[in-house]
Image (cartoon, rainbow, N blue to C red):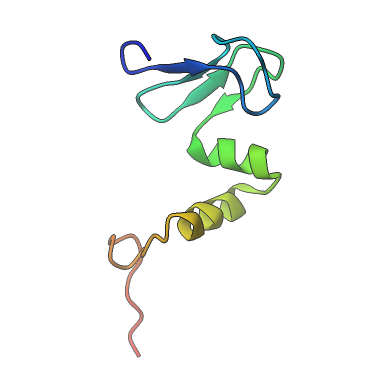
Length: 79
């Protein structure tokens, strides 16, 4: 890690070069190795899991048990 940037091998193509995969402080990432891909956290999960962006968002919500109502990201339903 240097200057808030994480550097290591690419987990998408199982790279071995220690300086090919960068995660920047703004939650964006880029592979300068074999796959030459980059994007946001959602893009990474979608590529890694082989799913669409909406499904990647639902996976993150499930994995981290995010309560979107408590976070104020969705309006509570009126029953």
